[in-house]
Image (cartoon, rainbow, N blue to C red; front, side, top):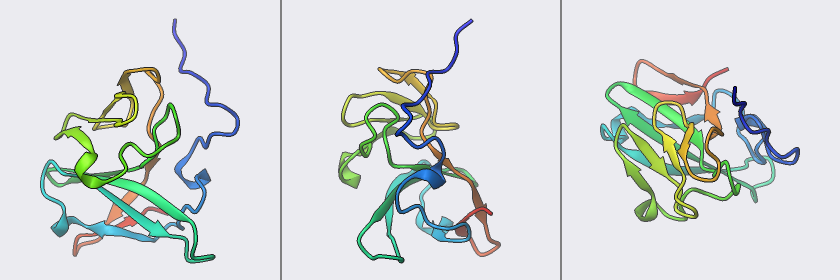
Length: 137
């Protein structure tokens, strides 16, 4: 029987433990701006102090939208520095640009690489009737 690797104590285990994490209800985007099969990098500046940044990814597959903290489970660095460098196979996986770990699109679990079995930090979402994407309570 294999068990999932235990994160280093200093590493966040949930999205809201990441420095500068926004509050539930915060708008992360709009479905009308996300093409089907897109993986879009975005960020929010910490309103409390104006200096910190919370980086995240929005993934769209049909009517389903997922959000993950843009932070590699292995190194804790962004999966890519810029949108044009983000590697992904639509509806299938996202690949870390630093060490090429593969994360499943559907749940963020690493399926290949040094962090196999670990996961991206998933951000719970709600989508309003008008398509506004918010962090769920």
